[in-house]
Length: 377
Ligand code: NAP
Ligand code: ZN
Ligand code: ZN
Image (cartoon, rainbow, N blue to C red; front, top):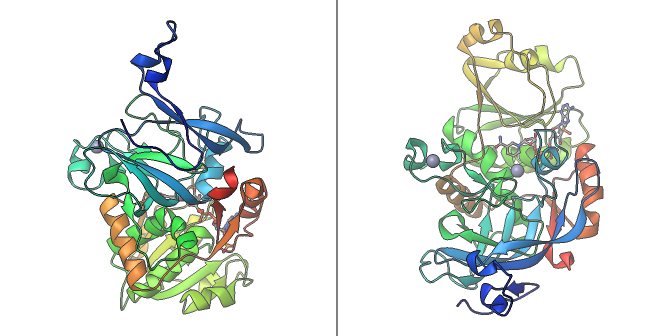
């Protein structure tokens, strides 16, 4: 029997229902009921509610969530932009908190440890990609932190809540030197930009452009700079230029200025596109130098038309990249600690989530909203 929980966990255990002859709870795993903020439908604001977490299994840890980042993917998801989902849904996949309970077989994390959870909470562990340590590309589909069918058949619920139960090897250690409230966005925005920058060898002598300077984009600038690359920001306007240069960019251009594209033709070894909306690929691909690669991490709902002739010039590549592996996520956290890199965050309380969504959609984010989980009641 696991120990007691802190915070707002209501315990509903199978044994409690032994007096109820009609209850089938004894056959089902016991549950923990915790506070959360969830989307009731694609068109309504998020509302305060409760969700159920499985009880702590032998390899699970229970985390009391401290902060949870707001990723643009949360908004795409709850608004049904990427396809139908099952409502109500609690989103959030940039989670930091403290371990408050561990299962009997847990060896990787201790009670009291400062930990994080990112975009996935499990994978098949057997396919060729999982065995290669690239479980984000699990051939069965990784188990997303929210909106995925979990191993027990339930739909996973994310981090806009007070507690989460996760199998230990999908839980990251968050270095003490990273400010607590700023650590959360690293779990998605950090690793999603670190992974392609590392894979495509951003570093001294490489010219990297970052398109869009929101949550992902501002982390791409900081990380690429720390890796030693020459960094250019391509933003819609020059309104955030001072910030971009402070984050480590060497150059900053407005894509609303028609002169930008011809001026930068054939310039970059690597372009990381973080834009959440449709862009004209031809204009951006034309900025790649010989053997250059443009990596799309932005995930607009609409297809992006591609004129292949643009790729023939300079032997260009167009690629995609999805989040990062658990190994890479830990590597990224340690890299950020070593280089003193942290996201720029604006803390919001639970009742500010819906307003924060509108500001993200208006590109008015400086540069990641983070929910203070203590305000979830
Ligand atoms: P975000 O904070 O909203 O940043 C997106 C930025 O794109 C905006 O700040 C803005 O930057 C620019 N932008 C927005 N609309 C634009 C438009 N119509 N035209 C040109 N530029 C525009 O979002 P995020 O959380 O960083 O996420 C960015 C995208 O990555 C989303 O689609 C998200 O779903 C996706 N994502 C993918 C992965 C993955 O694994 N591949 C992981 C996480 C997120 P400026 O103001 O500087 O122009
Ligand atoms: Zn995300
Ligand atoms: Zn797999």
